[in-house]
Length: 101
Length: 220
Image (cartoon, rainbow over all chains, first blue to last red; front, side, top):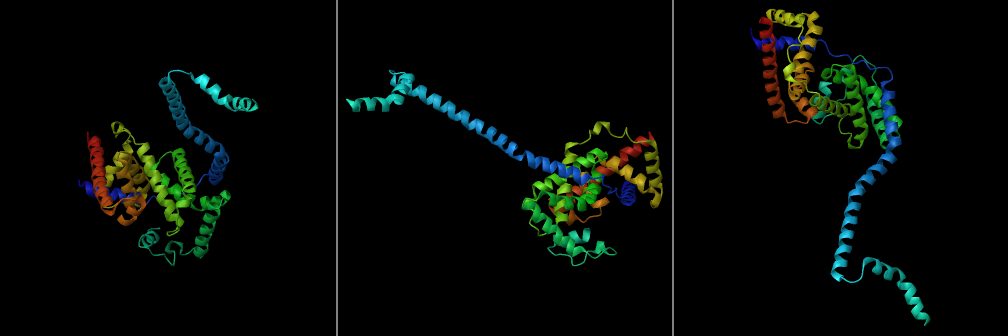
């Protein structure tokens, strides 16, 4: 039996029965509902996406700043970070007091 | 619409839609209204997409039914095609008819579906029914298929195609069942013409192997 011929006959016969193009009732409404729901969700999903994207850079910045502060502290050896922060925060107040004298 | 597609591929726009002969001569209006609807959707009017869905969904359903058997899967494919079309509408440049752009999207979505739902070959042939293998034997002994054979032929072809690789199934469906030219298949799939020819050659060989195994199993 020649398989080439059988294949051609089979495909030729199958060509005579194209699939149905019937559409389920109100199928377009279903797609439109999906589209409008997606559009309604868009601002939230956009905000969500942005937050997730920002998470990694924020974490990296936090780690590098922490590392930098620890290294700076160990280099100076003396004053603690707390003392330095206090000095920086109260610097304008100290300056004002000195001016009054 | 093979002729229209061929003309579009060649960079020509058909003046007369040969497939619309015998129907109401409203093709130019339809074309312009497609463009208007697309423009409206692009400018933010989501509801203008509904007439486009209503107009093209029968074609997309028919295409999806060539690749999926269960109606639920068919509906999922069609839904995905239109959702993708909506998302990618900004990439439609309007150089070819919207239908061609949409059908390209549909064919690629079907191909993705085939790749994602590939049947395992180890369950092959056990699911062929006896009437199907008997009918195939009879077809082999006949000179030409009878018109009544179409439904059974489609069923057998579906079953054989399920055993083929996604690429083979796609290329055989487009070339043999939809009767498209190699150039049209290349346009629809995004493959080169030579790749389509190579794939078609391999796919026919793969299908013959499946038929041979099917008939041999029947003889055992």
